[in-house]
Image 1 (cartoon, rainbow, N blue to C red):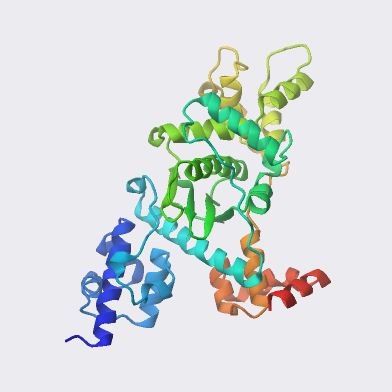
Image 2: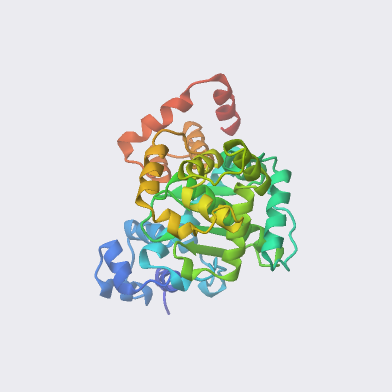
Length: 386
């Protein structure tokens, strides 16, 4: 009869095998990422090889699962996992990014609880029958007013979703081809945005993923099961993705506000110049490409298509030069970083754990923490958290 250690080894192996299969990773890929022979991965998954503490930590990071979840004593077949729709489109690097996103979502919730800063969720009820572009536009207009985003929402959207709606927004660098992802889990609603993309594109992704969250909450999907991934390739877009694009365009570039701004630029109804289009894009905090498609859909580009205009090398050069002289809308979420540093200052996490959470080398932790050491209000919050 197997002893308790052998039973744990078998349970752990099965749980690791399930996690690998869920993320669509091969044993060869896992072995390469962890620096182990492929045969070792096979033996571990079949309960024939013990796993060291260091190896468990590496598996935890790769699959986006807390170590304590991997070592649970319940039957692995009973564990409920997050399911990301269209996960079959992910590359191996994309699967790693999604696993990291899941892991950070759980860390985020734990930080909120330990600091006492859990945000109530304010995802509005949305009719699940959303089918037309007009429906998406109407929803965008209603959300813009409900969240008091004004006529140029890009500049306040991130803060509104984090502070008002209670969405956990996470961002990190990945070359996986992912634009973003969203999930409704036991930790609440969360959105991932790719830091390798320019700020205006990240804001557009944020608005796009927000639409998916609104629909996820409306269609009865279990909060422990619902998730979506979005890639960068137009040909991969579903009908819901196209609705999400329409929602994002109307949310970030309200038609009435665009008409008013065009009237300021061209009061006598002259055709818009390339400089006008770039100025419009900058003022709304979106990419010039996004503004071109918005104007094209509104019939403001004459006989030229958005693709033809954006292919003009002179326009793209002016765009690049203009972007270096202006501020981008806020597109780097700060709440997770703030909570992690507060938890460190209150003694809830170690310096090495903080480096892991912030994804910075250990010697750079102090530079991240230093601005948070100042101020009476901060001291009071740390005291309360402790």
